[in-house]
Image (tube, rainbow over all chains, first blue to last red; front, side, top):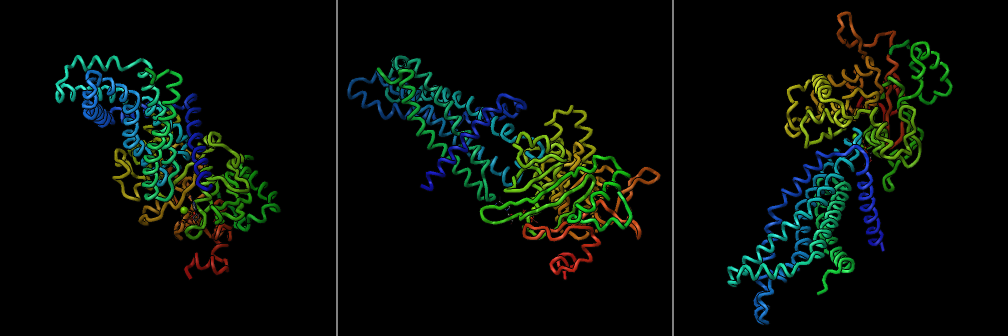
Length: 256
Length: 301
Ligand SMILES: Nc1ncnc2c1ncn2[C@@H]1O[C@H](COP(=O)(O)OP(=O)(O)OP(=O)(O)O)[C@@H](O)[C@H]1O
Ligand SMILES: [Mg+2]
């Protein structure tokens, strides 16, 4: 019971933070420069790891399934599997997990150490709202950049699958690309971009919340970072299920 | 502000009775809006979990007055200062800043109150992702002051704390004392009417500590700033409560000691113990006080 209450109050705090951030979007002051810096850090900075993750995920998907397809003499359809599983699921989720590890931890650490060294208090004392100055730019950056990173990961995943198909199983490139093309529908693409928007919100709000509520000195910062990454990752995965179900319902994804 | 010795028996507890007397004096000397205190605490309570931190604290800091706050480590001095800025809310009681009751204020409401207040944090609390220049300029940049004005003001403040050469440095490249002085420059930029010093001289060499005290004296006597000065060091107390700043014939600021007949009335001392005010008054009264705890604190015996 106690932990349920704690969970609910945390949920309330995170929602409240998101709501306050949302409200402050509509009035001045806005910190555009800071937002762009964060976008650069989140987007450009995470590109290498997200691309690598995407590439090898696509590659291993094909590697593990090609022979099964071959057994049923359906190897020409193998690109389909890579495309749908990447674009619907693995692209968004894996990118979100990588970004939660890299950016979620960085946000929690930065805000957390600002709290314990009283920089947040100093900021408030000097008349700046930390939500506007720190939280909003980070969440906005995540919400804008995560879908873009996901698209990049998807593309590299498809390339990875193609590389394995043609170099290890000597499949014609045109066969692979054809099966990829038939495997993707517009709703898949749309769903694959809607998901990371929500994941960005989850990672950003949890990391900011954990960072801003750090207590207990440097040890506390470590705890906040761990919590931010673990909790946002879990929520990404849980949320992914329900979001998938909802998108199936709305966009009619997942039916053949 | 100087006055004859008779006035130095004014006490927080007697304020009700002697109000008319002060009114007369103040009206004779100063503008009427001086009557509104810069800071006022009315029976403020605060506890963390079940530990009582402030237990019914009441005091006032009048316009142009400096309140020196003494007390053992952990007695709640920083807490009081944080409450004035609205960084912490009391459990009960009222806090007034410049006549405005801030207890019920939300964060956005507090922002305008905070514009009037400069705060020197105990640990410096510099933004370590920003160079010294941006730290000092922070408030002005946030207010959208034009760049060339910011530039002039920042250089003036850094000259004030004798750190012009550090303007490009990052906080991590500074020594503890330099960081503290940058913190002071940051607090004083924009000439706030109320300045809160939280142990500004702790861990500094005597000349630097002296400079910081002179700074506080200058703000008090020449710029009519109201302030709270938390300190542990007895010589800070001595400087602040026995010296005053004036401008001599050549236009320089000089510091003079109060004499036999003259006594500073714009500096008061307040001592806190376990969340309660156990002493409030002038330094002469403090020196004469018989309470063993206070004697031990002041004289070390
Ligand atoms: N966030 C907090 N949670 C719980 N207790 C706190 C918190 N902040 C301060 N305290 C407690 O409040 C008391 C007063 O702290 P405060 O920082 O005001 O002391 P201080 O008088 O400034 O001491 P020092 O001279 O060492 O700076 C201390 O006993 C401290 O343990
Ligand atoms: Mg303190």
